[in-house]
Image 1 (cartoon, rainbow, N blue to C red):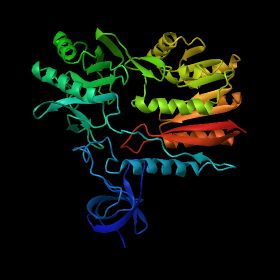
Image 2: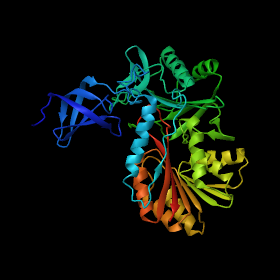
Image 3: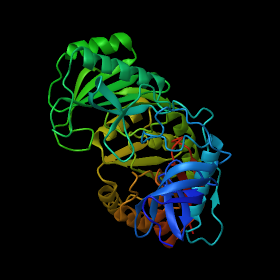
Image 4: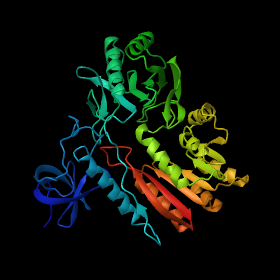
Length: 452
């Protein structure tokens, strides 16, 4: 029987997809439904009929999951952020473990691959230490918030339950400044107005905060008043910057950065190491879990003090420095020049003398470095979501290190790359999922590979 648009149906939800949407079957066709959980029986309205699937809108939950929770955020159903808040936290961790095991089962393996249970947080709230707020004209003044799901419609909300409290407080201060001084706000439909985004980063252990206003121009009116307003209310703000982005684009930051107050870095600690972090440099948004993640990467590297290690996509050198304390020599490679400068500063700051950093794309630098005669006993990979470029994997395979440690926040690209490495002589020994992003479907993984 054909499924018609606006028809009402009952079905069982079997699992969640990568976007935390529920999936069920109706007439042999997958039905995609927002806001439901595995094991639930629901009534839906068919609102979109495609050739390969149907999109359903939830009408009634006929049999709720025992793991269903009341979301702690009042805009949960509209915001595009924490999409599994309605699932109890232990069940979130179990879901992430199960997804990793499903991906792992597709890998060719002569022996079973051990996938450990996901390492979660004792307190999975207020863990994010970076915020990026779009700024728009609002109905009652200036609106700062987050985009609604699948749109650029702003959902304004004062207190985000997963962001550090200090970021929520800073948002209110900037909003008050913009309204008090009637600063022009950017309108993306007309590409007019000034202030586009507020980007902030705070340090878990030192409390330092850095604030960047992204503007469609080169100057901010009442700049002195902004500095006074922010620093009086929040003495922990150590740097305020202006970023110029005049392009009609969805990319948040432009290329020009100007420091208008303080210093252009904040400092934070991971374990016994101290790190300086610039606005453009990558740093994990969940520093509390980062130490757990790095400890597992260090364990999988199995260093004795005699190894040469390549740390590819090394960022500000945080993992490189962890590794350097147990290796003979570490070479880091990073494409973002600001991050490389931070990495060099961080090596000096922590008196790590056996680390060297190369600036450039890994797919360009690594073949050149290997051509010059450098070889690694251990390679650590922590690429962006898209995974490794083929040239990087090809060079690693030719170099044939004894061990590879692969850190990834994206399962599809991780297992695509693992398959290549497995097909060229490596075995995946074990995988440790780490929950860096509670209340979302995303999971970070550390994979241990050994040369067969």
